[in-house]
Image 1 (tube, protein in one colour):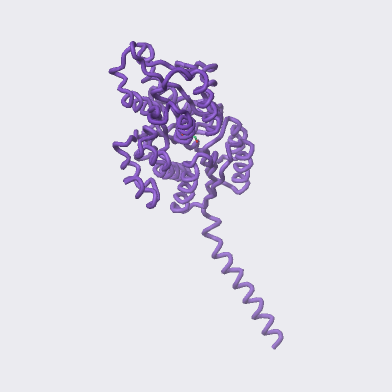
Image 2 (tube, protein in one colour):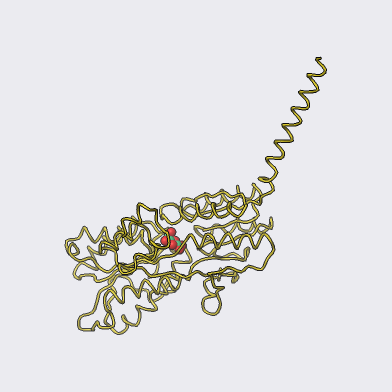
Length: 373
Ligand code: BGC
């Protein structure tokens, strides 16, 4: 009897082992995608990270997402942990060029790296970048200012006044946003119908002046303080008609500073933005922020995972809805060490007149969408 019980126990144990193996098999055989996002203080990255993970899982991958808190050392640790876990692909929205060392490690381990939304600068260790047409983002921002101020009708006798802000000098996108915007604004400045209050880099290559208008790590408090200083100094004796703001987080900080100044209590300057964040869309609806640029990040996430899937399967990438950057736009994919294959999605300008565009695209939660109707 004792023998029988022992035999039965062994059989049960072996059986449960087998069951255990069976359960684990599909999970461990699914390739792993590590997703590294730069920060959470700009809302879009929370959405991007969650959308990327969900899409990867939908396509049968195992996936994990980590946010780097605008700290490259922290993000590098997160990426290293993805490599230890045997990642096949890394999707990286980096913080600055300090990411290069872990991207080299990935290359050594034959792990494919996709630069997500932001280029990985000064690296020759990866092949793919998926983003929006960032030059066009800047063009759209400035076109909204051009329309908001009716610049074609402005005169040198009564010039319009603008002040310029740029994004983080550690983020390659910030240069394209700015140069796209200045391609529209410079002709008006040269004609004398638009005057720049504060530093005026004609292009991002004017490094000294660009640094003066840049906002380290896209931090709202830095932009707010700079705006307050401008209002109390260079802009003290003028009324600003517009502010070139590179994204919504900074636009709202700039508007907050303006609102505290009696001069702008009844009429705010025309302020641009980017990302179609809910708070900014709401502000646009209420006539405060003037414009934003809608980048459908759900589509970007979907496209990035499709690209990852095609790389894993050894297929030649083909991404519907994105164009492969060529000609002048190939510059967007220049890391400084090589030109990577760059897929561009199209950004859309949003003002009060077409606030329904991001709403109809399902960009907001239902409770938010109803407030934008
Ligand atoms: C992104 C913007 C974002 C900014 C700050 C840029 O790289 O393209 O969408 O607003 O970073 O996070």
